[in-house]
Image (cartoon, rainbow, N blue to C red; front, side, top):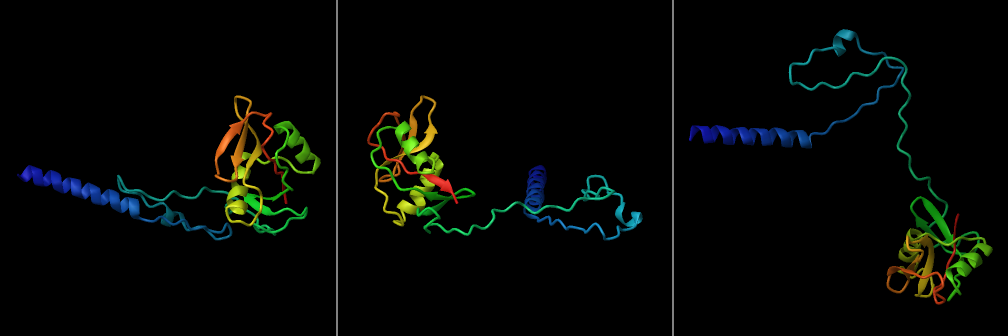
Length: 187
């Protein structure tokens, strides 16, 4: 019985130590390079065996720490009219403007050519999804609820499409003549 109690207490103690380590916060404090360092005697205290001590800063000049890169604020907002008259939406770090839609294009290649002649490009499938979520589902846009080409081709040579009625993502042969196209460009 005494042995079972000792084992149980050991397990509880280990659990408490592990949980206190997992929940403790560690805060980093930046020390300016111009601040004088502490005397060697204060910073070189010996650690007892098994004790964890903070790492000492390296000697010599140190470069200032750069803040994490953040997305630059955009002058555009989702749903605004862009410089070419199309609605603006966001995909990742990009703000994109949509072109006039081309309905029931003759083929993928024809749709791509027509969109490029307008000064735009076909969107990626991710850009189409963002456009669908931000402009179609919110009813900001009056785009027809039909299939739209992306510029992404699948390994079998077909092209990824998105249905703006259902959100269905699929792929079609390049010669399908009922798929619509919409262009995008960065603003």
